[in-house]
Amino acid sequence: MNKAFDVIVIGAGPGGYIAAIRAAQLGFNTACIDEWKNEKGGPAPGGTCTNVGCIPSKALLQSSEYFDHAGHHFADHGIGLSNLSVDIAKMLGRKDTVVKQNNDGILYLFKKNKVTFFHGRGSFVSAGDNGYEVAVAGAKPEVLTGKHVVVATGSSARELPGAAFDEVNVLSNDGALRIPAAPKTLGVIGSGVIGLEMGSVWRRLGAEVTVLEALPTFLGAVDEQIAKEAHKAFTEQGLKIQLGVKINEVKSGKKGVSVAYADAAGVAQTLQCDKLIVSIGRVPNTTGLNAKGIGLRLDERGFIEVDGDCKTSLPNVWAVGDVVRGPMLAHKAEEEGVAVAERIAGQHGHVNFNTIPWVIYTSPEIAWVGQTEQQLKAAGRAYKAGTFPFMANGRARALGDTTGMVKFLADAKTDEILGVHIVGPQASELIAEAVVAMEFKASAEDIARICHAHPSLSEATKEAALAVDKRTLNF
Image 1 (cartoon, rainbow, N blue to C red):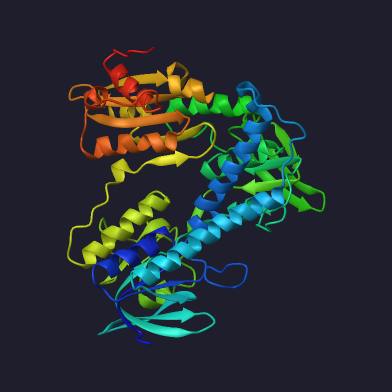
Image 2: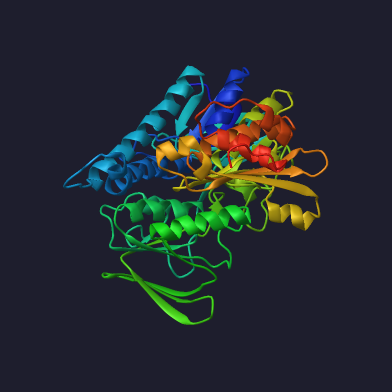
């Protein structure tokens, strides 16, 4: 087998496999290295997103939401059920099937696009006149050479000091996806995306969930008005959310986990729970890459230093995704992967960080793009705001899900859309219209003048755009 490549990609997560495919499409002889294994030891490309992140969590969120609807909302539709039960083993099995379908899909795409895949752990060996030597440590050790190398090694869950993950009682996102039965009590440290999504899954399945957050505000990165609406909804559902806490000690034993902490008033408290999910951020995967040996510069937090084009400190070495600056989002990594492949080809790859959407797949869903109202105030930028509640939307009423709103923020003079924020049903899908609008520098008036299907949830987007000019039609 030829071991010399134009492009070698280390990592087959969203940034890596997409970079490899795009490079191959552009005519480069491309290799991709990835070490993820399935339960049988075979390759499982897709990285954290496919294996223990985006895909399996959405599978469980969907299953648990169906169960929640059956138990609490079907009666409103005249649907009666008796002896409702849940088979968590089967639910987890379905989740695993969905993951495997995505793994297999990536392997198929590699074959289709003539990307050579190597199963193992990739690391730098040396640099020379012909490019870089990259070792593959696995069942079949290899040494490859590449003119260009794209590092897309992703990230891992950050451990809480003194509370190492055992994936039995103290869980990362990985362990949180594999709990064999709903615990009676579940603790979650961190009210970010992973904490809220996993907390929501197990609450629906019967757990009493307490979320402990160090920050004094809930979802500080989210528009404040939207965050307050979400907090209200989650509290009504039964999530117990405590803000401004300080974790002092975590003890794990046969009877579960004990968390000693100080609440917002500084009063000592103890949380006893069967399982504890720790979701306090993620750290870049650069250990074992031999970055120092090759002269690849890392910052003080372990991220690979890159410029605006994802170029590293080494010529023809690039890095994308969670292992570099910017939001740790799968779609951000994908866009960077495409851009890097196109830059290698001499094209002008482009990523607009100002229009990258964010989504939290809870119920209600939360999605946003652009700036928040508090960011605009801090910047001293004059703006107009418009909101429209789903309670006034006919499609939401028919769905039986009227929680939340759509919020538009636009420049006070030009009417250019500066941010769109949604909490409510299908927010993850609705936000796409806002992203397109902002990419084309649209005004709120542009959205307000576009015909939206009736009845549809997207009409709430149109009405919120109308509200910027104080002329909603249905509220």
